[in-house]
Image (cartoon, rainbow, N blue to C red; front, side, top):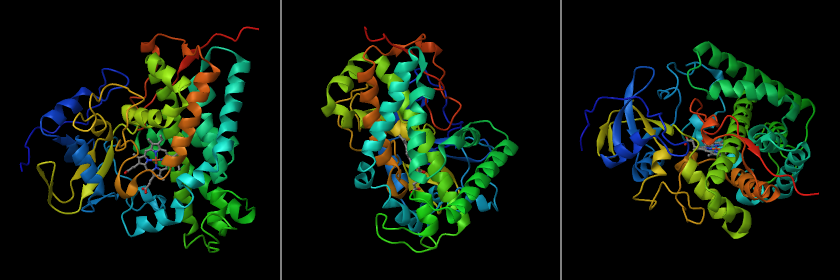
Length: 416
Ligand code: HEM
């Protein structure tokens, strides 16, 4: 074991190809896997790049997810230390607190539970494709397809008015963008918080059948049976945090997979043809696109609770360790020929949804939206293609969740 005294460097950000993670990751994987990482706040920690090490990081309870103790790979300032707005955001909690939330919510997000949403998702997808067809080419696939579909789905699931999306999308974008000032980030969090807090209050007075209302008022025969009147013991502040986490996570992620995934398929026409013509490959195709694109581009962040060894290096208590999901998903020791997009490959241990106790709660929902969305789009518009040169597609280098800012596409109108 070494402590690898290499000079700390910032998180690799430069991509040579829109679909490949920065090549610095490949070098690091080959050189031993772990490197010293310099954070924007001046702290120094570690970057792990191999599949084996990243999965160990995420499964090891000697690491904490507590956001008040980690350095951020994108901001130079901490979350507000006394922030009541951290309440309910269980992505940044450890057991037993995390377990309490996860138990409460997981019954809503099971593969089986999500299958009940399939008909509605198909309908939403068809509506948006029909609107695109009526409007005619060209279109921005982000605004006409990739963004509205997951947005409408999560709004309906939670019971958030879809009409409010311009506001909450704008605030969420501030939280997910790199290089924002402390004031901007705190103001966006406040605005989101006040918005969701108001919604939680409204659910108490005007209950409906959607998830937030059921968490506030208790279930009325929802999955898992009747809940308690205080939503299994969560305070209104805690519920606000839960609502925000679900809204932001449910929104940005799948939207970017739909848009970036379509872009990748358009650049690999033989792969697009398989998704269009062979329904039996769609499940594998979705996993492969998740692996190949790994939109949570800067990885997962943990902090060591004690001195320990991982990936052949000594990590000290209190140091932040970033596990790169994007790099793990291109590790050739796990995925042969990792830089090739092959929608027929079997990748059961791809890590785009993370790993361990925080593995994505919304993964079954996201999968269903992609499984429905890609083939429906490619079948409705068999001649779908980019409407600009590939290098004109604006990439989300500047966002926590990678993807495209816009995807101008065109197609031939059906004859007659
Ligand atoms: C957690 C990715 C869609 C809700 C995570 C994590 C990743 C991830 C990597 C783990 C973070 C960590 O370990 O620190 C993705 C991707 C998605 C997606 C790639 C789409 C393709 C969704 C959707 C929802 C959602 C649709 C909506 C409900 C969550 C929540 C967590 C989470 C609540 C925290 C889970 C916990 O801490 O126990 N996601 N996600 N995600 N995701 Fe997703």
